[in-house]
Image 1 (cartoon, protein in one colour):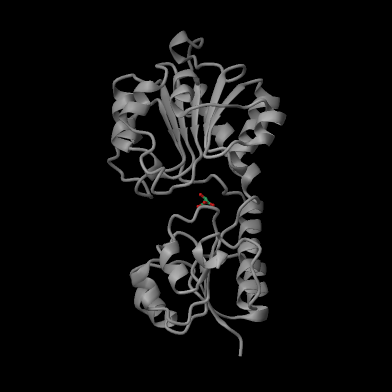
Image 2 (tube, rainbow, N blue to C red):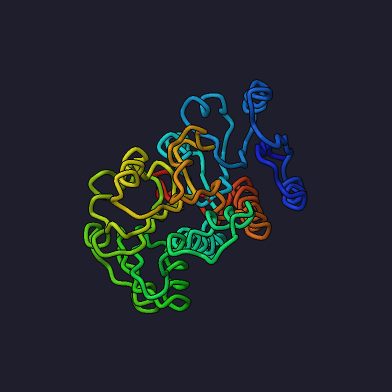
Length: 325
Ligand code: DGY
């Protein structure tokens, strides 16, 4: 008998067909209040879960006694309660590496868009306001030859460093749990404390995964430590920043501007003060959202799922207690 899998996100047909070769699939394009009870019903005898964003916690796992694997279609897995999964011997997988270059492109885009005020000027042109020579009040600031501070030098941080070093002649500072020799040797990155990074960087780019240690890593004190001329970029998770502190820093002019791909909560609330600030560039969590990369992520997640359900070790097993036993 084929194992039963619940796919709870819209997924490319080829990926779905691949999963169906070895699994019985129950497919929800998305989960909402309409299909919640149907989803919970299907969960009772499901062996695998495939999707993104859903909080997989004790309450949900209590409803899924047959579950063997959770395949997260994302590199980040802050939505998974790893301890609960581990206690129950359920595997969890993610999709690292395949999205590094795409997210790095997004981050460079955010840096340039924020520094050169592109969305503001785009609006200005389309609104028919370009009726005189550009005045100095619309000028932005340079990106090239500046100092870029990267907090979280994993695969994505390294891909950003590569672009910044070779493409923009930037000096790179980084802060990370461990030293990254590739970033140091190939892209000239210098390891330093968080405080030094904040003091010296013209662009501070937050790329760390969300963990209990990194929650609200950027708060009032950290924004005060940044240069007044500096730009803050967040493409990690909304919760790595104390959003109130960011709003205050922008309102008080403690930093120049911000480029944000992530918020807390998501979708961002319509009355969030960040949305009415001209010096804030916003994106709807699109770091990895290209046709190619989202397909590659889904295919990798499908491979993880199928391999795990066959009883083998999936290529991207998340290292937690259960996996080191
Ligand atoms: C990831 O893969 O973690 C991206 O942020 C999409 O959620």
